[in-house]
Image 1 (cartoon, helix red, strand yellow):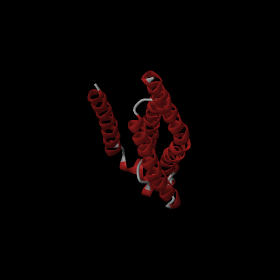
Image 2 (cartoon, helix red, strand yellow):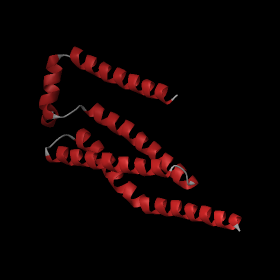
Image 3 (cartoon, rainbow, N blue to C red):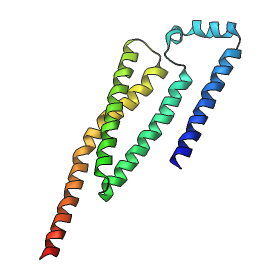
Image 4 (cartoon, rainbow, N blue to C red):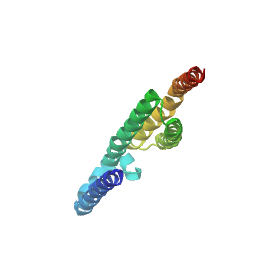
Length: 155
């Protein structure tokens, strides 16, 4: 089932990007030239504004789902290594995204390029380290409860 969902998402993204490319190729060259000359930052943009929306629109829900998994798993006291790996992965992706976003901002990239990267990077860099102590304490409480339960049954 997860593979099917991943394939559907991938095919949807490919269709969306290919339709944007086909539309851009069929547009009048004169209209493109006038639009680019009106916005000088758009001539050297890493990607169009719509791709920035896609990055935020896909990256945000992925981070939300990861956060939901972390909250569920830590709340029930299960999958400690998966929670730690998810938090570490979120942090690493956040640092990379934040660095790239700051570089884009310093290079004068348009808002649609640097903002999604900085937003996702900032949240992914700040949230995992801030919630890790409480998650670690929750797992420690569960471990102590299990150990005391085993000690009580051994008597």
